[in-house]
Image 1 (cartoon, rainbow, N blue to C red):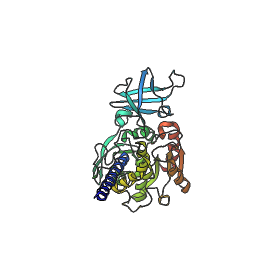
Image 2: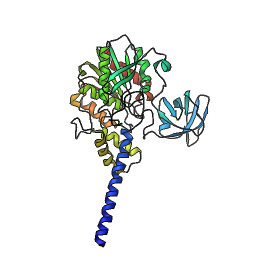
Image 3: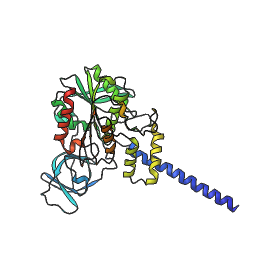
Image 4: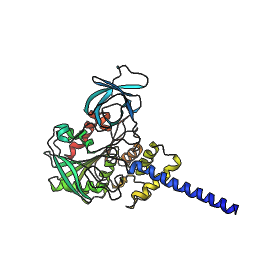
Amino acid sequence: MRTAKATATALTAVLAAGTASVVAGRLASAAALKAPAGRPLPTEPRLTVHGTAAGRITLTRDLAALRPGTYGLAGDGSHAVVGPVLEAAEHTADTVVRRLERVTHGTLAPGDAVWLTPNLYVGDPGAALGLDHADVDVPGELGSLPAWFVPGDRNTWVIAVHGLGTTREHVLNVMGFLHGRRLPVLALAYRGDLGAPRPPDGLNHLGETEWRDVEAAIRYALRHGARRVVLLGWSTGATMVLRAAERSAVRDRVAGLVLDSPVLSWEATLRALARARHTPSSLLPLAVRAAQGRAGLYADGTAGTAGTADAARLRVPTLICHSPDDQVAPYEFSRRLARRRADLVSLHTVAHAPHGAMWNADPGEYEEQLRRFLTPLM
């Protein structure tokens, strides 16, 4: 009887531990599969506002607060734009002073929790940049996809797609540059975005199903005057455009790809986001398996590749902009792809930049790289 009771107790403990592990794995996988648009990723630290003055803001000293470049500064109900660190400004050992470019909306008060974001602008192309545009609906397989269309004289269109933790407002960073080159731009909201259809399972598939929305945008562009398209994506948006260029029935109309911080291995990205949520190392494999099961990431026959890019399937000129300091999408995968397809891929390395913020770190150099890449494709 004692042996039976001991066995039952041990079995119950094992089952409970197993159930807890499965639940923990699902929770860890949610860091990527349920990442809300416009909210900070787990890798992005919360900073505290210590004070503001004319043209400057004091923030918690952190590696994030010391990043070079210009960023959005978001809080609950507020948005501002901050420039470089003001090295000559007085600061304490625990604070950093950056240039405060503008407060877009809301207020910034001491004690407020904020985070840096690549999104410099708020609103649509008209409100943010003064650009004429149209709000259009792109017919997608799940329903209408809202998009901004900024017209241009050329018959090569740019289709731009945001990624994890941002919204289509991210595209506004380069919208003015693209408009200055007379390129029509279609900035797409895809499944799961505000105003777009919800995925049937409510999950982000890290580009593995969302690429069909990019295909829908290509078809829309071709129906409305485009002869060719350049696909520009950030983060999982970069994964989406890469998949569309590989798999779409209209991929022959894709002239080139621009991939900013591309997620080339969903497994590596999921592990990074789960780790940033302080998931124990022993549970990371469970998080990967949970994501695989929940989102069907191997459903298209790529089992064993963990979503890594197939260099052999790349067919068009490609510009990759990536940082070795990216904590979400490992730079090594971009470097490997560029090395394997040196005939098509140019790699622009940006130091000390966070995920999806290569433009923010050095806008001038980023736009020069874009100019050189786009000019032969126009």
